[in-house]
Length: 246
Length: 246
Image 1 (cartoon, rainbow over the protein chains, first blue to last red):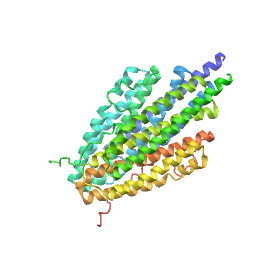
Image 2: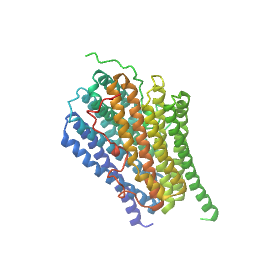
Image 3: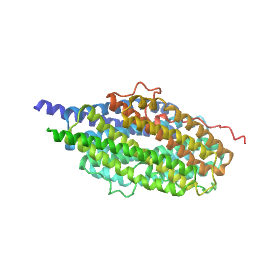
Image 4: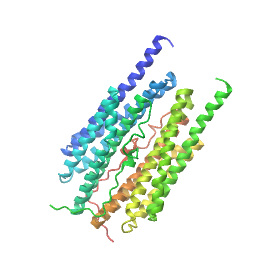
């Protein structure tokens, strides 16, 4: 392998990493805009989120193709292989994150047709901000290869669940208090669920960053026994929630 | 590379494929048992599903480790590389499928504490059977490398959405008719959503099988514009469903 080949190989890997970082920036913006579109009942913004999702899908396909090509032609080993496989994994998490943001935006469009649902949408906004922060932090950790930062995101995984549980209770109470809101509340319920899942994708990305940097699974150090998305579903028992007091 | 090395390499790849097939069998059983536990209000079975999920997680980790090891040490190319990367992808889909089945079982445990919810649970059962069939078909396609069968699963993707939409309407109608059922119906709603997502994982697996066999993406031939899980979310506008007539 001559100098030229070595250089091109490093370039290829850097290009893949840069594309993942770009996907990260886009996914972050999609989540923030989706939440804004709910909070402000902004139809144009919601539509923009739905449309822009195509860009994330295209980047995902491109990253996957380039990564497979790199593995096949360059046969990377050790940390280069981890970086390549990590890029594929993170791109998948970001593509799903984009799908979830798009789904929130679609529901925002439906909710905008009905009565405003404050303070419920404010609760969604708060949970959205928490999830956005986690996503931003883990993407910062990825681009800067900062292990501590990735581990910090991973360790605070349960904050999102707490928000989700509280919001879940709030929504059920609201529906029971006024059954006419059931349709709208169901959309808010799925928005909350989507945010929880975006939080799980941030956790997945933290695990991938850890693996890329150290070569080891973060599994085992985790505060909770359960490692993936649906495992963390809180499934609170809400057969008898309190009715609203106001 | 001598004859011995070549043999060991093929063995390693076959072992990975066999483990994925085994994960497939387990995931299939988990989905079927989770649905049975809802239909029969079977607490022991629901608990068994929750416990057995650990096995799927362990297999997933093992497959990922073996696949990375194979790529690093054996540097497979062409169809061997596709088989290896495909195994990793399918194992991830099966692990998520297991998580979703486990989540259904957890909700079954909660529902078993309350009043029976027929005919709603019968609708869940019907949707569950459809999704199970799709999962079985795509796993058959995987183990037999049958392209047509994988494409057939992929093309009938919208059947699950139709079931989901009908069930969604049924649940909202039920909740509005009797707000005391909102808590239980919310669990059923998430069960339906989980089944829809399991259906999406079956579609993902069909795409991976297509890629493994042909080396090409199935994308572009798809009947719908939208390729992944949350994209397919029907988000029906149900602000004014019909009230139950019975």
